[in-house]
Length: 243
Image (cartoon, rainbow, N blue to C red; front, top):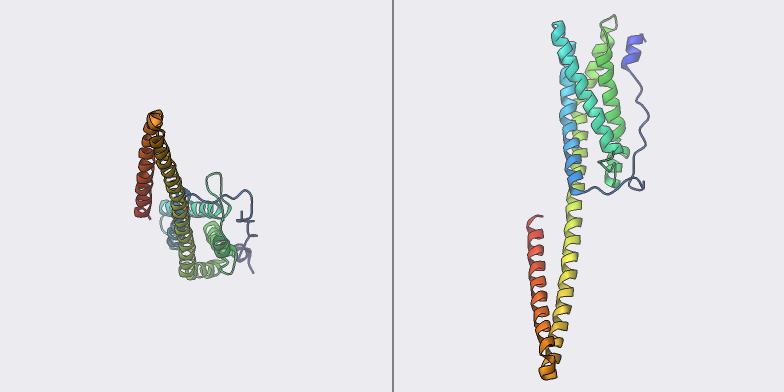
């Protein structure tokens, strides 16, 4: 096999060690982080197809300025795809990495997502680095293999995006449950406080004139607990309307 063919058939690199859900460096994603992760995962679909398109256009030849422009666009797409893949799988200061078993599975489980994406980017890089020479047949073969991978890669990236979307939905449900639990606790406290206020008013009434001042405090406490219960109901209704 010629040196050019060898360059085009690079072995996939070793998979990076993911920051798993059991890694103490990994934190649960917030709603804002999930939005970023979904956007990154969705953008990978566009970048994979743009990369293939630019490489096909590059192989068609043309003027030198045109080829330079196409190569620049292709290299930018590849660089961005690599960086996004690293952010999704490894995380950074702003993103948590693969924080759930579902994400671990789609990238490093049966779907073999990480290895397939790494191999795809290697194939694209090899074609971008090739130079005109006697190994044109090998280049054509590698290009055909990359084009054949377009649809499977798009399907894989769709699957990954869907997993991130499902994780966002689970997060929203967990947050709603926590919100409802908090509101429930507040309402329980309000009910207990209202009962205390009622008992205090009864005791103040039995105390006669000596309990007049205490009766005022108890009445005010009852009004406060009514407001607590009303605000808790409003918060619960508002939370339900956002899910």
